[in-house]
Length: 256
Ligand code: KIV
Image (cartoon, rainbow, N blue to C red):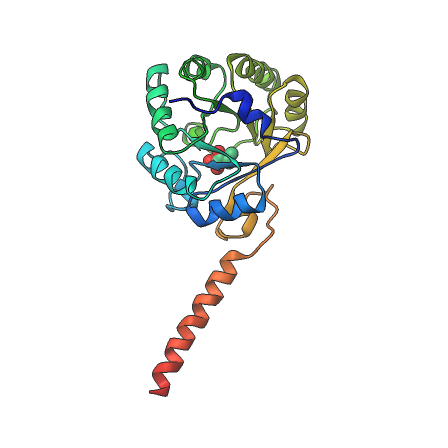
């Protein structure tokens, strides 16, 4: 089966690129109808949908299910799906896992990491599967790293990030997410690369931005990352709508 090529996906992403996560049909359809250019079925669904502590317990089967239901809501946006942790340990496994996400409806897959992922991206390119890279703070390594730490601050870190970004482009990534990175480093990477950079907590000078849907709509009040700008209050609307509904049921009971 022929999948979308990196060039065809890139031609659908116009700077400034708007990108957001979605995990189900109504959210995907609303984001697509709003005109967002790229929708990510992020493994952040572990926290946002499943109430997990982080992304490290998300499985490939869960990603496949969410990719299928998001696909039904997306007509126009580029649909990217995350390869979850422990599903791309070597080149062969990467292609097998990515193929399952593509069969579920993804246009491309995303994986986390720099130099250690080059061989896997090469295998994806060979298999005709477009790949979005992800550099900076890598949520799948949060346990190893002991927390979510901004990248590019320590000596030598900036140079390594820039060199890794260049290698990812050279290997064939069609775009790259830069997460939680010193803004100046993200700007340097953006200037050096010809593929688009899509930032989250990486300053204002990437080619585009990506956010977690629940942060944008105010749908997850228990944790809001410091860089998030919250535009709505879905949590409060849900809570007060359900309270009113309960109130009506109780009032009806008293009328009987
Ligand atoms: O899983 C996710 O939501 C992500 C974005 C934060 C980039 O990878």
